[in-house]
Image 1 (cartoon, rainbow, N blue to C red):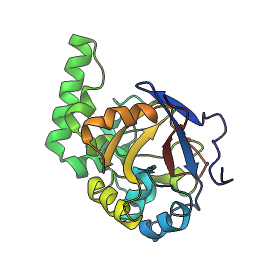
Image 2: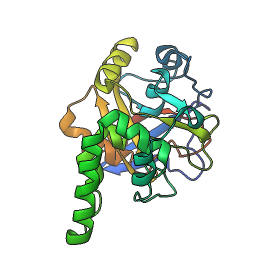
Image 3: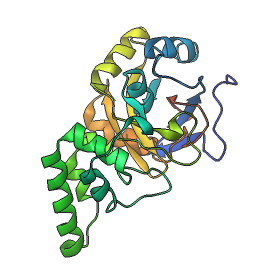
Length: 239
């Protein structure tokens, strides 16, 4: 195995979903910046190591960054409503979500104020009456869920940045597949240490939940690993 394709510290190299065991091979890159070209990043780091039949998975974060959808905290001026709403969002060690004025401000811009206010109202009711959480993001939608704020241990400059969700993730996946000569399938993923979602895919979208399970423990890591993409490869000893 290439020295470039080693498990991150504390992460397993394999995982089993629906009875099939897969290798999940992180690909180390330089720190991807807004002026980088995603196609060139994939050519440089992924093309030399992918094999026919692999699935290349790429984090939504580097897709969004190369689309110009990241900004420093000091570039965002939250309105009073954003500051107020952010106080009611639960923060976790794995992602600040909309729990700070700057990320909530971007949710208001991305999703529209009426939708965010409606999502907040539904969330309050469901928590009080149904003892159920998660309705805010179910109502606000994927654009709100995909907003990524700074967390402790994140690689600079993204330890002080807000990154929005990527635009047209299915199209990005299709373009990257073509770039690699249609030898591999491509997933655009939003994963962290508590799970994730498939945002774009060149595979049957009915299988998105399967691939989310394959990556559920986040083999790319959450901090300074600088592995924003990886390979899913079925184990040869699968029966």
